[in-house]
Amino acid sequence: MTGPEYQRGYSKRHEGDIYHEPGRRRKAGKIMSVLEDHYGGGLSNLFVLDVGCSTGVMDEALAGNMQGLVGVDIDSDAVKSASVKYPAENLSFMVQDGTCLGFKDSSFDAVICSQVYEHTPSADALMSEIHRVLRPGGVCYFAATNRLRLMEQHYRLPLLSLMPKSLAHVYLRLTGRGGRYYEKHLTLWGLQKLVSDFKVLDYTGKAVEDPVSFGLTDMIRPGTAKQKAALACLKIAYWLFPGYIWLLVKPAD
Image: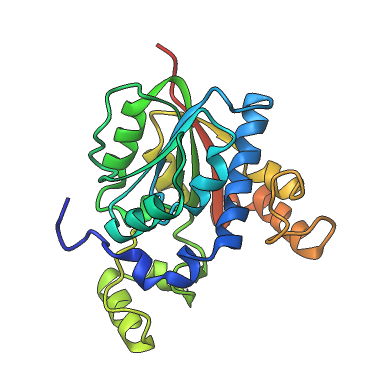
């Protein structure tokens, strides 16, 4: 899709996050821990697709543990950077639209879709394509931010994701953070509807309960008041939790 709602050039506008290797590698560690927990160990037989690979930092960190990994992104500058910086036999990068993937049905054992759904013009089309290219029984690592989050994570502005689009555009311009708010966040109920074709394995609570094993110590440390508050929120008001970590399983034929 090439319409005005497609957020091209994201890496240039968010260089501090996208090119920050330590942060991206920590994120890769979180993904790895969830996949290893699900598969019970090694991932060396998996052929994996990362939708929204950006500059490829996470993919380079993950690929050594897998049979092969393909990263795709609409951001041509980011993909070019990844291809030059991270050459490897089992790792490749392509400029592709996540809502119209150029792969055959059932091509991948696993897909990574981490904090991506809100950047696409059609999250429904994105998840339909992920479902299509996954092999039966395959899984999608799906990390998603809740629209009801008080502090919007991309622009770090309070209440931004809760605003109507017209007001959000103005808010960004007035604060000097951008000219247009492209992101389309969903509430818990919207996310559940979005992934309704999959079986959902919820890793959110597991990660909060054991942040060491699931690489979450940069956000939550064990035994702290923050961890206790997060666990209470998960139990009492799951719909208000700022983000979710799910494994989406494509039903076997």
